[in-house]
Length: 563
Image (cartoon, rainbow, N blue to C red; front, side, top):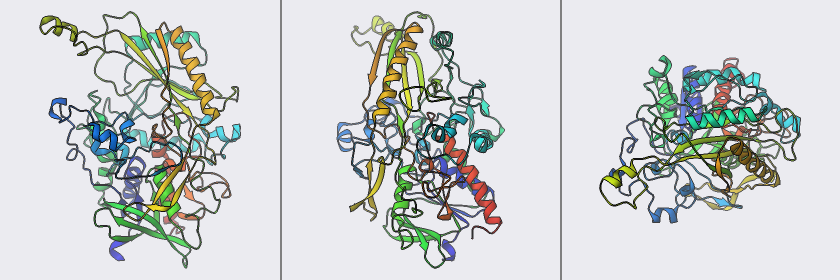
């Protein structure tokens, strides 16, 4: 018991779990981090970080046998031969799809922080006010002003590149030097801004060190080289990950104990003490069970797995899952609608090119239903676009010799790619449950996922297609083409909800500090806590909520309120 006792336990080592570990350890808490996957150490365990395509057996392609065996993860844009060691294989970790849902996972120390897209936009006041104003989900128990200082806190440590714009719909943050638009992107920006009063077009904000400061150099991180090989693990530590940033900071304090290969079975509820006392795990390799104890527990296993853990944590007091007095645990799952794309070409600028492989796109904050409900659908969407020139090495129909060399060293015409990131409305019918009869190899019930699009999502998609085509037309693009990927929910990798925050314990699981209403020493600060999804990429919000919750939890511990 004594060797298994800590001041705090964190379940998960990804983006939010790494932040929980750092903040707890730096506040003097002896902290155990439980990670269900293998250990991955920065640099040491990035086997392909500097590999050339010809150094890989399949030239960085996925062989057919892998595609057939793992059809879900093979849909992910980042899953290739050089990155597949950081992704969960469908065949090894099954789940039940009540409706089509592509669940992309990364089970290792660092989790999906090694393979995320690194886009970091703050929420605005309109996002936190949205559910209450427009009458969906439940009211967020916090507002922008509550989380703004914590956005700043995490941005300074993470390192976020961006431009200062003074926009209400996308608040400024603590920024490093912004990336630059290329000439075609700037031309499109100017024409869109001239044609519309309600549309702001800015360079994307991302967790990349364009101009590292002392706080980043002290972490051992360096400048981004615009290689766009990020999903392999960055040898420079130039993008933010738990492995290069927060976990080393936690370890530096001497207060961190990291236990990989620890599959969390459930949380332990003591009926006599009427509180959660610890965590039961199953060793991934040996299958042996162990128990660990702490007065405070943070659940950061990623949204759907955090739901699974709580649903599987049953007792006489909580027969339907830990903290589930409201009956909404596992319900109101939401995600981002990525289905819509618009492609086009742009004539001119044939004498222009650009530097490197910039790790972000041009973005446009949501302009639909921002200050009031005005469309025939609820909420809206962010828009991203980028312009580039392809053609290098893609002209094999030339004889070998000077002609072949010249043709394949010349860039092709400019093309434009535009995509949507639509907000979906949390619904009770979008839910996850536990399989009554199927378990994984560690004896844990499989997760059943019952999530789908609705009419509102279709209307948002239609509006994006219409507006995207119109904007690119006014911007001077030609050969404009709409596209619908028809991808299943989940492939956005932005699943949220199921353990939502709220003001009323009768309709929510967590309070304004991410604390379970019915089990106050348990905090959930990953995507599971989200009341709604907004239109922005969510990771920086998870980080800010985590840092804020840790600060509150430690304060309550010192007051003797969490024992």
